[in-house]
Amino acid sequence: MSSTTAETGLSPTPRRARASKPPVAPALKRKRRRELRVALAFLSPWLIGFAIFFAYPLISTVYFSFMHYDGYNPPNFVGLKNWNYVLTENPYFWQAMRNTLWLVVVMVTLRVIFGLGIGMLITKIKTGAGFFRTAFYLPYLAPPVAATIGFAFLLNPGTGPVDHLLGKLGLPQPGWFNDPNWSKPSLVLLAVWGIGDLMVIFMAALLDVPTEQYEAASLDGAGPFQRFRYVTLPNITPIIMFAVVTGVIQTLQFYTQAIVAGQVASGVISGAGTNYVPGYPSGSTWTVPQLVYNLGFQSNDDIGSACVVSLVLFVLAMAFTSLLMRRRSGLMGDD
Amino acid sequence: MSETLTLDTPASAPAPAPRTAAHRRAVRNRRLNWIAVHSLGIAAALFFLLPFVFLFLTSLMSDNQTLSANLWPQHWVWSNYVNVFKVPGFTSWWKNSIIYSVAGTVLTVVSSVPVAYALAKFRFPGRRVAMMAVISMMMLPPQVIIVPMYLVWTNQLHLTGTLWPLIIPMAFGDAFSIFLLRQFLLTIPKEYLDAAKVDGCGELRTLLRVILPMIKPAISAVALFQFFYCWNDFFGPQIYLAQNPASWTVSYGLQTFHSAHHTDWNLTMAATLLVMAPVIIVFFFAQKAFIEGVTLTGVKG
Image 1 (cartoon, rainbow over the protein chains, first blue to last red):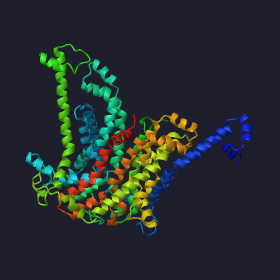
Image 2 (tube, rainbow over the protein chains, first blue to last red):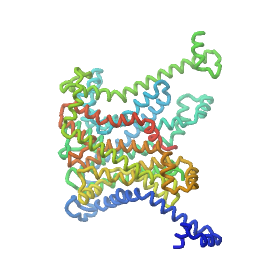
Image 3 (spheres, helix red, strand yellow):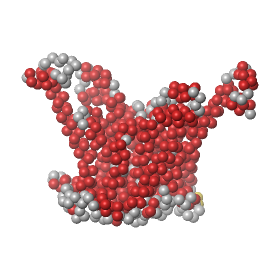
Image 4 (cartoon, rainbow over the protein chains, first blue to last red):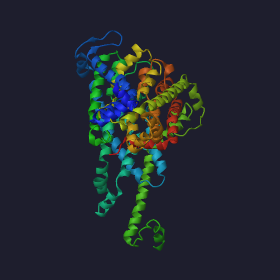
């Protein structure tokens, strides 16, 4: 009560009286409390969002992972049955895990190497830099569905332009999205095509490397490779780490391209229907997120098992996210 | 000999170089280097641009030609771009995509700016934890929480088959946008805020009058990212809209296009390029803001 009057400054006398006594502590406390209230007001949209769209569904996912639930009849507790089903009986889980792991290793590695290469190239280009920058960046902007359909056409065995060109040049014509051995490499090709984001990040990092360090290295007789190894690389290591970790998290979510490529290549596309066998060809493009969709929405409304796969995905993503939150990563900012 | 020297002098003007064999070698190396770098650049540009060229050429072919070995259209069938709009639903997909993208972008910006401002500039207990929560949300695969969210939207709210389940969450702040805005806000010196306070501005007025004009570049970057995210979104529409074709967006509708028009690759490619077009046009108008935004996500090492 008295704090309100003091705060609004309506009655100056008692406030001056109090300020002359052991001062600071209560005033400071009040100030802190007020600051917290203002902070909460500013944060409120996100706090509500956090509760509704993060905390609630996450807890709910854990709950459903122990339930048998089809989405209509009331759920009933089945203990570890869903976990057991997913980890030992589901025919696709380990295949999806292997595919996702393969994509994480190959796709992230190639994207980072290629992104760094293109980033270095663009910093060296003197003539027409604007044109090259736009050209390298453009594919990243192509909506994933459109880009995937485009690639499925370009690489289509027998009819695609790339296939024709390879034939004319007398080169082997692989089955691309239709061959189980080539489907994942084809997805990697598509991902490397859209390298623009990494190119820009690396370009900015490379331009930040102090030029004196290069000059000093040159004076010491360092060649281009040594300059790269001992000047460039140590300077951009944090950015490379950032690109790798975010790349891993993105690739764990790899979904749209895999599902669209499989559907277009197989020639079976289901708008609202569900008659498509995922992972075409031969399960080679199954990924973990697709299994969530398949179990929960497509095959038999096995919501419990879908939630188990969700939680596996959650644990994997959070393990890598924790790497990003270490102090040195720079992600947390100033404090 | 004297010829080459006169040619070279402007390039090496600052240091009047000794006209030696070593100097000539350096000049030659620099030229070879230029040729090597630009040849590589052209090769890379072909890799990035040729797919667009092939798609474009195919979109202008006649029905029969798309499956032939010819890469160049025999007749330029520009009417493909008109006929594509006669495909059932195609125009309504556009309407839905525009509603989703515009409403989603506006709501995201309005709800994310105050949150980012509080996280960047306020001191309060639990600030670090809040930031960790933002990063966790940002990195959360959407598939992790999709099942319970779908159940709420369909069983309790009966809103599946409409755009609402996609748009409403945007009113509660987007983690990536909050993160990006905060990174930018951290670069604004505290003195500006102190000055505003001395002038008697409350927090809200400080944000609206002082901060907002300063963070325009970051806001345009966030708006662009969010627009692209909504436009490209496939997973959300697949979950919430699949049951009702009238509510489909272009990114979702596009994949059904090919099945309805089996071998009509020309129409499919015309539709594909049309779906890419808004994103690329917006990019050309806002290239600078966009590149700045991408750079900001990489944060300073």
